[in-house]
Amino acid sequence: MYHVDIEAKELIPLQEQSFTYLRLRERFDIQEWVAKTPAILGEDLLVIAKELFLPSGIRLDLLAIDRHANLVIIELKRESSGRDVEWQAIKYASYCSSFLAEDIFALLADYRSEDLDDAQEQIEAFLLTDLEELNQKQRLILVAQQFHSDVASAVLWLREYGLDIKCVRLQAYTDTGGRLFVNPEIIIPLPEAKDYIERKEAKQKEVKRGIRGTFSMEVGEFDQDELASKWLHTLNRQSALTPRFIEFVRILLSERRAFDREEIKGKLYAAGIGSDIGQTGRYLSGISQLLTKKGRSHLRQVITFESDGAEGDQKNHYRVLDEYRPFVQTLLAQLPPGEVVEEL
Image 1: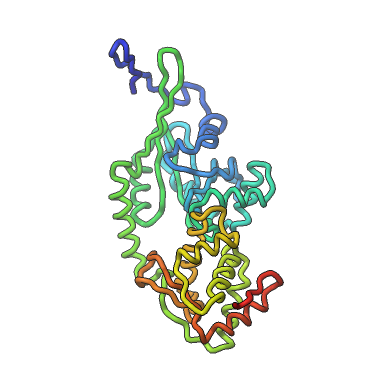
Image 2 (image 1 turned 180 degrees about the vertical axis):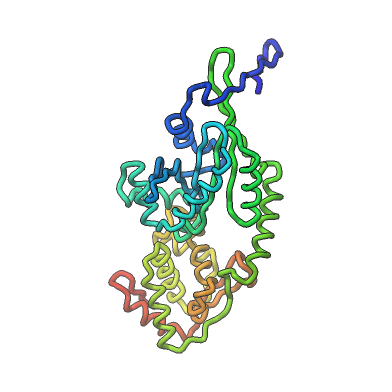
């Protein structure tokens, strides 16, 4: 790395340094840099915990959330990664995979000395996806000044089998005046080949997943009692998605016709679902995903919509079938006060 002297038209080399030589420590220096400026890792992250001790006694350096609601385990090494850093991070991820949304809110509340409601609001505002997706997946980011070849090989192999893991190299330099510069560099996956690598990995995962996916367009054929039981279970689920789904059903029941996506989005926003129209659209996508989950054929028995029949495609023209309108109205009438839908 060089400093450019524009007037003299010269390149002045910076001196590469080790963190040990500079007497910089992993926990009290490097960890603080990343915690305060997580963008150094090449993406937008919300740090929710630092120095998190797990029941086994081991300590997790940093825990964060990315914009897509994944938990991100960040493992830091001052100098070399060593031979086992990826295995260490995998152990952390396996433990964190069991965290519920309430656990994650509590971690951020403790980290920032705030109450749970404030923590939940911050996380919900940060996400670009529905809160229902929180911690459905976990990711790993390994940070070191040098990566052992064994670790790099293991990371590439783990990525082939669907584990989202990234390696970031932090290199330190000083100039003649003793000023310190840090250069972050993503070495896995290489930024220049990132799109190609991710497409290849996605294709490999799709082939391996086969028929094990959760997407389905199968329509249920339940009798009245079983259908009522399944619907009541959905309407009473303890989830941030539940009140949004109830409001969605309220809109469908307001008139005997199909509603297009943009119309529903506007009505949801008017009902206070989402802080802005963009967030409301993401919430509607979460509702659409709910309607196409393999275990939700009872919803598709009652609600119809247009779709290309492929996972991830945009749904439109939602409608409650006429023969089920009284049925759904009766179920909604059983909800606690304030959730009752008045059919127009």
